[in-house]
Amino acid sequence: MSEYKITLSEQDLPRSWYNVIPDLPAPLPPPLHPCTGQPARPDDLRPIFPMALIEQEVSTQRHIRIPEEVLDILRLWRPTPLFRAYRLEKALGTPARIYYKYEGASPAGSHKPNTAIAQAYYNKQAGIKRLTTETGAGQWGSALALAANFFGLECQVYMVKCSYHQKPYRRTMMQAWGARCVPSPSTETESGRRVLQEDPDCPGSLGIAISEAVEDAMHRPDTNYSLGSVLNHVMLHQTVIGLEVMKQLKLVDEEPDILIGCCGGGSNFAGLVFPFVPEKASGKPIRIIGVEPAACPSMTKGVYAYDYGDKSGMTPLLKMDTLGHDFIPPGIHAGGLRYHGMAPLVSLLHRHGVVEAVSYPQVRCFEAAVLFARAEGIIVAPETSHAVACVLDEARRAKEEGREKVIVFNLSGHGLLDLGSYDKYFAGELVDYEYPDDKIRESLAHLPKVPQE
Image (tube, rainbow, N blue to C red; front, top):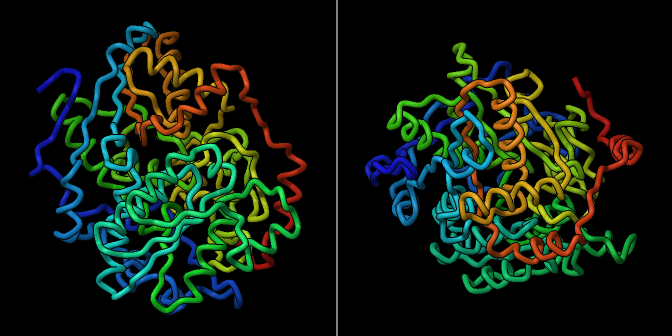
């Protein structure tokens, strides 16, 4: 066993996903039907999701078996390594021991295939021929393109326009795996055309792209919609990350004091931390920190309320930390974190104090990413840089306090296709965005009129 790289064998790949719902501190509020405002029934979701995923969405079973066909593909890169960041520790002069789970080892370069493979499998089993989705930075779109290719499905991706132009090689990845990618808002859906009519220069948002993808799926019987974050079944599929980390830490006789992940919709964060929720509930003093961009602060500045998951109000209403479905954040380079809401499961844990939330501006995150790259050699995605920035702060705090701590974070993806963003950072062209409170209040004024208790 290397002291730098903690690996597991293929036999250690989790055979079941962990479902946090039975271990929540309070019941999860149900999704509401967008037209009636009443609790949505499983049948209400059948026009866009296969029944197997709907059942996982509402399941109260603590462990759900992973199909062998899914495991066969996950074995291409899983289990992923856990690294001890000795060089970073030395650079910081910290007594903290820092570990990072490297999800950039997947073919798509991020954690996203963990759920993309499962979703493509269940749709294939249901007889679906085509999938639609949205993507921000392109990590999710490329992951679903990969998964659809493996299972012989067509794939249509609506990519947030500012990221479509910022990150052209993610579009190339999607095309290489057989998917079609268009910038959103587009002229291909009524949702997109409506936004463009109001604002022809709209940079796009995940909420708009979701509207387009859902509309597309609802108009074709051979097509389902696939979501890369936010929903319960997505969080479920990502728990292979944390389940592996638990085994890896045991191999080096460590227990985490602090768990850290970047947060957009919540999937990579949940994947790391959810398996540790029962341990925290049992009394272990684990801090769990979600890190979001200051330009899109759904947990740190949003409200916990029912809101649509998309711009046009076609999705079920979810009880979540939200900035309002009309919120369109600035075009920061962490495109995967530009979502107006947080996963309901993460939001509930946040509201009950199980999860902490902090926000960081993008220039500070790039500074942290460069320090990390020079110490550890890995160039992280702009999304992951938010987690890195928080790790540096916590490691420096450990130094000030003179206390040993074990810090574990999820390196959710590499940044080798984000080098244009790094170019802008080195040229001094990146700008920090702190979204104005009055703009957030304006967006929150348009929350749907349903009982919020």
